[in-house]
Image 1 (cartoon, one colour):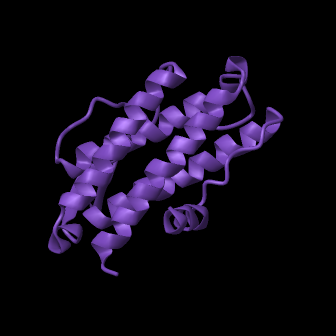
Image 2 (cartoon, rainbow, N blue to C red):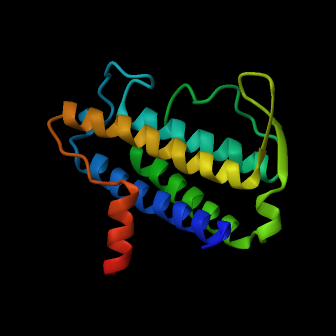
Image 3 (cartoon, rainbow, N blue to C red):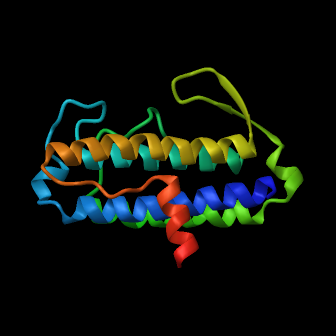
Length: 168
């Protein structure tokens, strides 16, 4: 399996994992999804918003465009359904973008400036891997907050996705 095939699988996994996570958060009583908790981004929706913001920042890096973000999250978040619409569009963009790259393009270096300051350089493949890994990391926080809300988060890790893909 080549790098393109692996990264395509990972972006498709991210899309699937976001779908079942957003669906599970949406099934909670509204107040639970935005209830303030002792966590970095305060609540489930704001945590998911952070993932979207980072996806968008790195999308701009991949396209060699500037972005308007001054931090790694916005002060407020949109309603969950609006955020989900934006995330679905973003997830589809990453799948399509990954599909569009040639093998050689995955190793191209993208130079950028971190939101918090300082210069960064990553290959296109490493950026794609980062957004997949970053989303997984923060879905874990959302899962923990779901347990705090007496709800069971969905099993959304890679082996479950690969099993579902195989059985589809």
